[in-house]
View 1 (cartoon, rainbow, N blue to C red):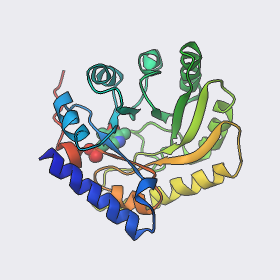
View 2 (view 1 turned 135 degrees about the horizontal axis):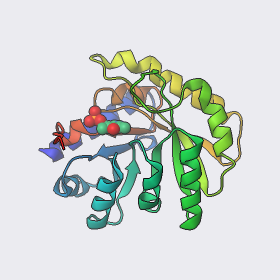
View 3 (view 1 turned 90 degrees about the horizontal axis):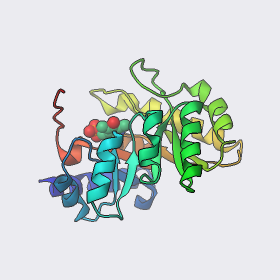
Length: 231
Ligand SMILES: *Cc1c(COP(=O)(O)O)cnc(C)c1O
């Protein structure tokens, strides 16, 4: 079942790439495995998938410990400063940086671990009140400040689009994030590249690819609905 889902998503990505004249290799599928057991991850792993996304530090750390070491773990959820130390050397990319203070903590931990932290800036393009992320206007000033910190590399931008019935409704949001990344790339800031554009989820990843996504974060379409146990 998961395998079929996975191959269907792969097919859709290939199709969206073709439709927009892009190469399949330009888009990384991040299989979002939050709340799902290690066996589910292993099933997709055995099909060749290596990029997985988690939104909670403890869950990522626990899975990282027991699963194959060549998995590339992406931290896609809001990150608390006191938890940075647990994942600093376990994640290839932190997608959700939205403040200088958080970036400072990441930088400090990266120095301690003698590694470079790759990060994305989370932009709340839709200006939804319930979401994390900085506004479009705040993005360049934030990046300029963060780019001065040691052992940190800004690799691009990320956004979470609203949940909508018709994915076309999110197209303007994806367009806007792409525009912003092009604007920022032109500034040629030290330690800043805008190569990564992390946007698109189960409901809208094909539209996001058409608008330039280089990472899509797909959970439900691969692993099925999530069940949250209230604690
Ligand atoms: C859960 C989550 C996803 C995946 O959502 P689906 O709709 O299940 O594909 C993507 N990005 C972030 C930041 C998430 O928290």
